[in-house]
Length: 132
Image 1 (tube, rainbow, N blue to C red):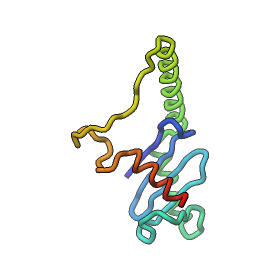
Image 2: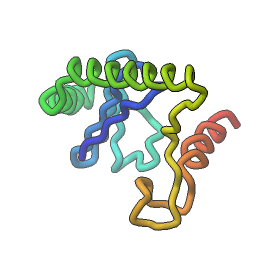
Image 3: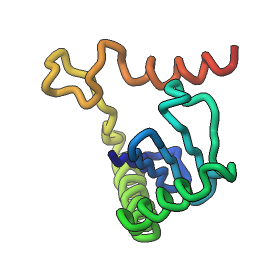
């Protein structure tokens, strides 16, 4: 299973791979994150860098780089962000900024997150929980 996060607010691509019981998250600027989902299903303890999983971590990192051209992906994301910023600034001069916000639909087929909880509640509640 593969996943990527490349939205505004991330300084570079954040990439995830899950193989068997292991979930590995890689970013060019942050330390790696590795979870053993068999013993840590809630993903609480980062075991990246520990000697007993060094071979697993190395294999997962290799898989990340085999699947993605990280430099090209980062370059494409930055270019896309620059283009949207250019368009947004151009629209502001006319007084009508583009609206790129996602709006949830009552139709389950239109949702990209299949849950009864809206994305913002899901994303930001987890951050709030960490503060308490």
